[in-house]
Image: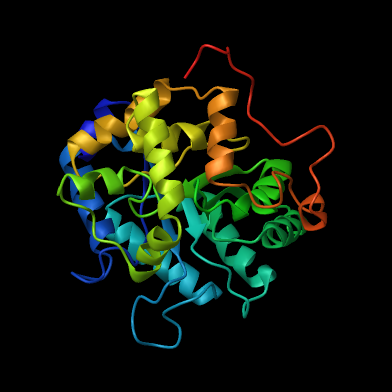
Length: 312
């Protein structure tokens, strides 16, 4: 899968020190490390990202963003990945018990040692991004370069504050779960055909029950466009202001090839409006504070670049 992705020009690989832990601690990082070793000189072609925050062992210092845990976790990740440096070292969550001064002391040390090139964040609120950048600036550090947030057609809360904050700060936005656990990949169509459906968590199953009518309308729209639902969902994210790239998790080479098709699909205004009707944006399409007042932003909703009327 990673060989195929690299052959397609996909060079950003994202993981975390807690991924794959059901099999073995850091199992996914170790898998990537074996792949890098087998590929030989491909390391410079890859932008490698991993994360720190989650519990990696049973001790009191084996989680969070304390300086001790950040440095310890980074060294362990480097060993599993079999590399000298991490391109983007991401804070997997906000640590409310650790001051930014301590966090940036540790991150600055790792950058100075050449073990980390850039730092990123995941699941931060808009004000967390601002606080993090202000603290980094006070220490004359570069700060964050990216934010991973939960963002897709079904979950658009990030549009209220996270996306505007990240865009204003110049951060790349990397939406995770772009297909919302498979609900935007044609789940109803596959069920009707008695095809295999990706297992979903109780939360995602609840979202399906609550949003079944909208999802059905979405699949009808995709059929009308002649596009696979997963392609439309990814194309929609790729066209959103501020979004760098969605993080995909294909399980087969066929799914990977299907996802790449989204790069050649552009959704016109009529389709975007129909998608907004099916999956209404939070705050009437406006960022905060207009969203809290229930009125559109002056000048209308935030849109991506205009496209020809005859494009999909």
